[in-house]
Image (cartoon, rainbow, N blue to C red; front, side, top):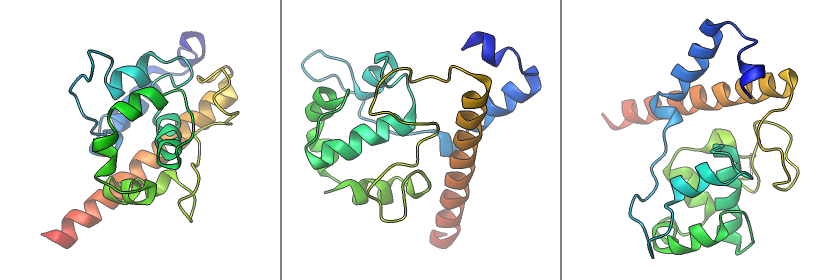
Length: 156
């Protein structure tokens, strides 16, 4: 992606990075290794079909709750007790305030760029798909930040 990203002014790239490093761009996953294998965060970062994309990770989690296969199926299964805390996908989405990344009935993901059932490439290959990915990513993180802020105000 370097040729695509470097075609933008550094100021724009920095805005994208800084939005991602706000609370809305962060996610908590268990950090303990199970059976000396990768953690969820490690697996999603090293899997080429996911490439550290949160929308694709959330699709894997959605499928986990449905008992369906995904590129992270084995990893997520090792952490089934963690996912069991939320009972189902809707519970997971609600707990982590991810409503802005799923459709209205919580049955599907609003992907950051076109999705073809985990077929590569998982990273943008053109300026247009990068702009779509970056725009949707920023939109999601900002919406989640607002959701978290509203929740904090209600509970304080």
